[in-house]
Amino acid sequence: MKTVQLPDGERVPALGQGTWRMGENANARADEVAALRLGIDLGMTLIDTAEMYGEGGAEKVVADAIEGQRDRVFVVTKVYPHNSSRTELPKACERSLKRLRIDAIDLYLLHWRGNTPIAETVETFEQLRSAGKIRRWGVSNFDLEDMKELLATRNGAACAANQVVYNLQHRQIEFDLLPLVTGHSPLVPSLMAYSPVGHGRGLLDNATLKKIAKRHDATPAQIALAWVLRQPGVIAIPKASNKAHVRENAQSLEIQLTEQDFADIDRVFPPPQSKQSLPML
Ligand SMILES: NC(=O)c1ccc[n+]([C@@H]2O[C@H](COP(=O)([O-])OP(=O)(O)OC[C@H]3O[C@@H](n4cnc5c(N)ncnc54)[C@H](OP(=O)(O)O)[C@@H]3O)[C@@H](O)[C@H]2O)c1
Image (tube, rainbow, N blue to C red; front, side, top):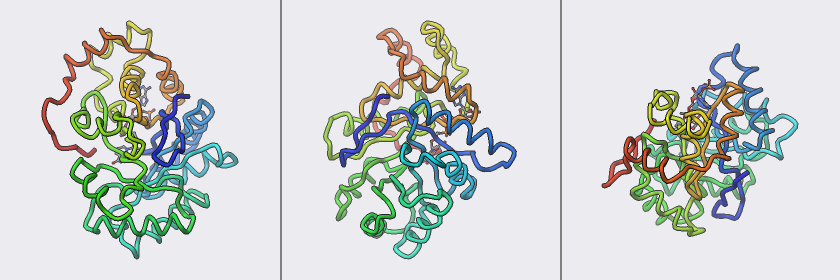
């Protein structure tokens, strides 16, 4: 499995698993757990969740999936902005730990920026880290200006990752956030690409993507993932509740896109030529 090195030296798989929309429906739970377990067996041992997903339900699905194999898995979860103050963050962390049935969160992210000053959230993350409740922390949906402010904050440089939208239809980070990471500085937080196959919103029906997939005897989702994974320092976290999708996604690592593929992609999904603000799904 291709890996990405976090700023503290920890290596994590470049291809992980998302969980948004899991834990919302009791009838789907067994399939969701089975899909995540299959993904772990196939090497996608980084699992991304959030207290928001299914209002805690997704964290409980993750708990079932990692039962008996916690040490093989790198658990990422996220706190709501309204829970990111010095009083609320430790409580939210305890609730997530309880639902996940683990002693420490491997990576704890601020889901998006809210009203709590970033310095207060960072200070509290650092306290949770000292207490052994979390191993490292990061942010999500932070655009370049937010990252600059964070990195200038006391202990802000300890940020391990920024989780942002990145797929063929959303290439905004290529203009400024991505060059920071691919510049190979070990001090820059890694990027986690969310919605890498387009959140099931039609990307996979694109004719060009289908044409490229045919050339590789692959599926559009595999091409979309291979395209995200071409970037060093980027972690992709597709969500799949369907086992066939999980298998496909794992195989995307084997696909080598060609110059022709990249040219075709750039024609239909052009890279940004100027600063565009970072969208949030
Ligand atoms: N930080 C944030 O603000 C934020 C925002 C969005 C997402 N995220 C994280 O990123 C993860 C991924 O993003 P996402 O869930 O929005 O979108 P996504 O992973 O791009 O798309 C998920 C959808 O694609 C389908 N899918 C997955 N693999 C497929 C394949 N090989 N072929 C066909 N369809 C496939 C899934 O179907 P099935 O489930 O039926 O298999 C699901 O409907 C989330 O689950 C979450 O953990 C974070």
